[in-house]
Length: 388
Image (cartoon, one colour):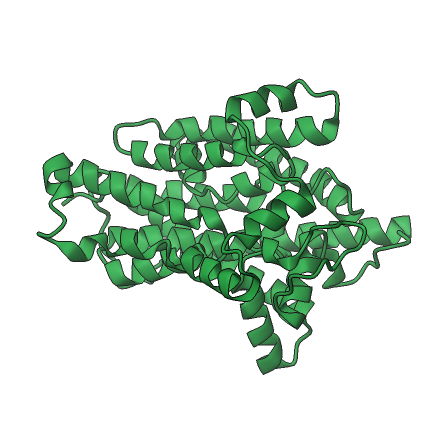
């Protein structure tokens, strides 16, 4: 029996469980140690520098930039008004609804502040996502060492502290990875639900259908794949994936008269426009501004990591990552390119598979990545525009 990327399927687990004690210890330990080190370092930096704007306390350390938008959205809901006079055209329609909705629900039930609710949601989702990515990497490779290394890479990746901040990355990572895992385990309705929810977190959540479609094509061949009426249930995830995005468009149409209010406010308030990806890549890499050059170079390094997926067994994963990168690079603003890239979890599987039997190289990579993440944590703590 093979999985949907053509490899021998790993022994089936019940649902998402069935992890051995050592696997649980590695996942929880990697999460706890990486988060404690990052948070302790961030708080130390703020305490030592006596920053005039940021206090060395939690959850404030994990609230930066877009976090404020999510908190205000959770507090007051959507509004077509410009909430920041210094940024005309910027409204909270630029942000998708699921994460702030969860923040509001948790805060109202628990009595936590919205900031603490956001931090709690992000960290719980990140831990859960680590287990899901572990399971996927093990299933794809039939090797526990690959799953373990993939988890360690996720915890050490530069700017990975946003998985614990009031940002959507952890929730998005959980939903997209869970959609893939459930799809491969033939739980199609649940996979479709996760995919639909992911497109209510970020618009590129719909791109998981690229992997669904190519996996079916690889497994069934062109003729059987096009004959969707023979087994219609396996196409449920493809049909359901855009529903979260469609729901947001419908809500925007009802409240503003513009179904694409998100794109409109992103263009007017943030200056987001599109151009050919290769044109933007050349302009950013050759720019004299570190703010423009660094995010593009960082995303290109993540893309190089995705080349490890160019195997007969994992090319659908590479195409999924490639389509996402092309979408990211098409934006004329380089802001957030690294943050967008680190949620492409198949990259960690590909790199882990390539280095699973090379412990020295894997150790050097982990230490190097975590060192860069610590440097970026320092910049994040001070609210640097290099970490947005």
